[in-house]
Length: 280
Image (cartoon, rainbow, N blue to C red; front, side, top):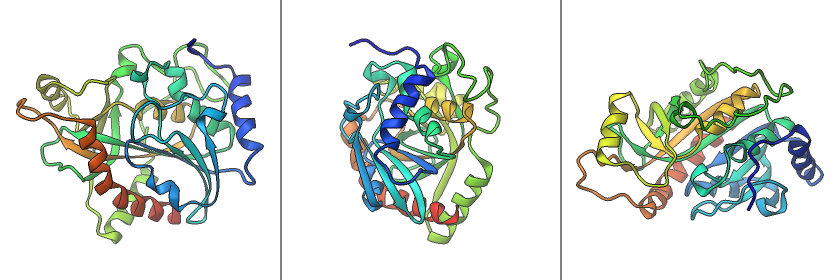
């Protein structure tokens, strides 16, 4: 199957128009729900469901825990576009395809993007089932040359060299902290790193990540955030901690473990995100 290494504005608008023609209102908040975290979409009122398979160019998830549909409607008084599941670079798609959904959100008028993921704890204080507010990230894939902004710059979205000094919106982070405090939800905070996957990290990998200041590790999110910031969207990010880092090689990590932790994380994340939406 031929992969799209770059998308033109016309192609992005083709996808956006297909979605626009099926929804009654313009969404203002986009949400990307990670592994096992798709339950929030069930709370949307007057939902319009669109399968990714019905949209041109849109990558289709092949991983369990990623349903593969858009749910567009209202949630806590906000017009939302929710991605129930995402596609990852390791599934064989291009970085442009990883970033396409965010580009489409930008053309639909989405101003705020909330990203979530399941992540492994590198910080030894974190426990499976914890929620972490992403305060910053390390873009290891991008540093190694796999950037969703590689190729011709689309000036309609943003500059050739976008700033990443405040990738995650400080005002939105403060709202999240306040909501968590009011609801009695323990909210960890830290730095997320995106690796390519799909293999989980070796103990030596994890000791390296700990040494460079990583708190949680996953295989998604950062490329989406880079595209969002290039297009001047405000970003809020959360990691659901699904497993502890195996720093000594004594335990085995599985995807089933990740999905199981999602059942504990999802209710807390749903309550927190609903609270944030009410404040916007």
